Length: 272
Image (cartoon, rainbow, N blue to C red; front, side, top):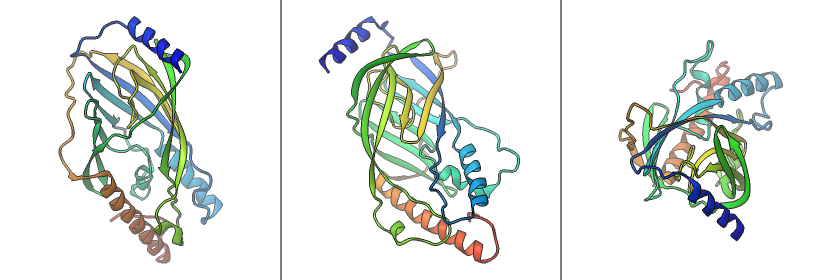
């Protein structure tokens, strides 16, 4: 490990000094693999159609505005594809990356503005403590040299099934360990990256976490138009645990409404 730290120090010393008031914008694309166990209690034809729509829904593009003290991560706006309707908007609700995310490096806190069935919440909490392991591996992404770091993280194992509700879904979610791999560049010395990833001595340009891969496609340093990197303000302020409880209740409500809709002869979930 000492050799890796020496390597990192050399890289940092060779990185050109960046003014304290610098700004930058990074563009990312993400893809999420859908678990094939999803929806095992529905017909194969219906499951295939839903998985195709889920896959399209989880292929997204994002922007990350950053400076020397904070960053703002958000999804790029896009037109709805022909044929999409509100019945399948809940696919975005299941996506691991949601809303507008503001991160402050020094305080290691975040504010995440998310929408949950028409209501906005401001989730304010501390960023996860990331104990990265530097591997010494490197590669290039675009014109940047990036270095590999890994960590293991425990996440809840969420189960979402259509149709009959299992008693397991009402219990405390089981935890599972996932491996996260990040590629960061000291050439852009900011301790941030896409989603809640950060804590490394350089901008994260690629991250692989469980079934989701996020890759930087472009970086613009000091854009001509000055950016305002401030925390979102409109919404009901809640802590992360409180929001997770609200979200859990909405999942239960969504399942019950789906069941009622099916009994009435409908073919999907329609939010109120």
